[in-house]
Image (cartoon, rainbow, N blue to C red; front, side):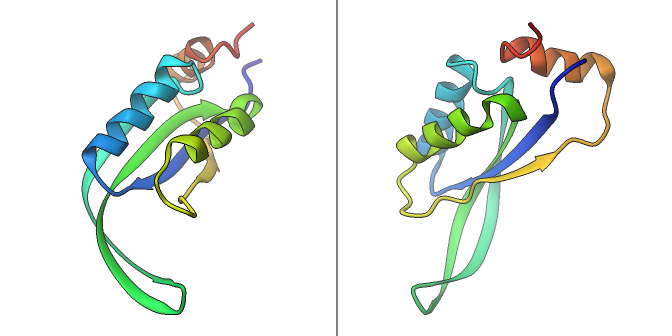
Length: 109
C-alpha cells in the first residue's frame, strides 16, 4: 500500500526562488514533482496592513511520511518570514501516478 500522497501549496515571490525550491526538493527526493504556476495576484493582511503582491504558486507532490522534512527544507530555502505551506491530501488519482510519487520520493519501499 502506498503512503498517503499529498499536494503542497507554497507561494513564492519570484521565479528564481520558485525554481530553486523546486529543484532542491525534487533533487533531494522530498518531492516527486513541482509545478510552478505564474501570475498569481495575492491579496492578504500582514502585520495589520492590506498587502497585494504578484507571486508564483508551487504545486508540490509528495507523501505524508516525508512531509515534516519537506516543510523544514522549504522553511530553510524560502525568503518569507512566514511562507505559505499548506498540505492537502490527494483523495484519489491514477494508481500508476500515485505509485510514481511514492517511488520518486523513496516511499514505496
